[in-house]
Every structure is written in C-alpha cells, then in structure tokens.
Length: 112
Image 1 (cartoon, rainbow, N blue to C red):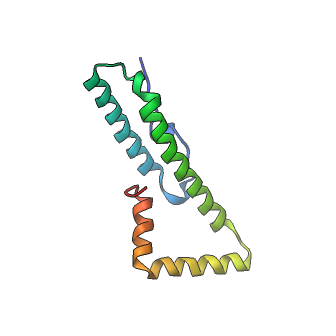
Image 2: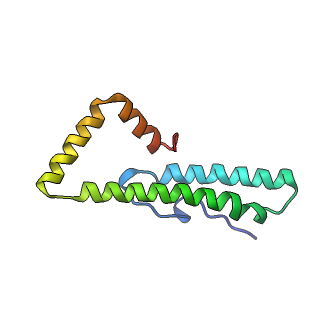
Image 3: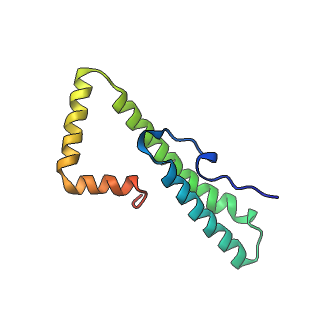
C-alpha cells in the first residue's frame, strides 16, 4: 500500500506560532486535490505527487517554517533594546487594524 504523510508527520514546526494544525489542514486539502486530479485523469497518483502536491506543499511549509523560526529568534532575544523594540512592534500591530488583520490572515493561511 501507499502512505501519504500530512501535518506533523510530514513536517515539524515550532509550536510558537501555532501553525501545525493550519499547515496540516492545507496538506489534506492539497492531497485531496491531487487525488481528485489523479482520479479524473485516470492516471496513477504518483504522476502528480511530486510535481503538484510535494512541490507546492514544500514551498508553503518552508516559508512558514522560516517565518516561525524568525519569530522564535526575535522573541527569544533578552537584550533591553530588543525587548523594547518587540514591545513597540507589538503595540504597532495591535493598534493598526490593517496590519493586524493582514498578519492574522497570513497566520490563518488565508493569504500567502
């Protein structure tokens, strides 16, 4: 039989940003699309796994992992200047609605 890894079995992300579930759900959605494409074309799913599913998911997952790692790095800094800069940045995001909504959309996987 064949096995498709999705979610945390396919990639490991730091829990800092809570993106594991979002990425896993998008993995499932992409896999369903790939299965449907295989079924409709009458071709073996292996034809589409590497070119469609794997390539597209790797791009998004790698982008998310890089973003999460950057957040981890930024929020892990303990120097006074870094703590102050983080505080100002968070206040900016909290008080500027369009920026806050854009970041929320990206985090939810609604915008890439």
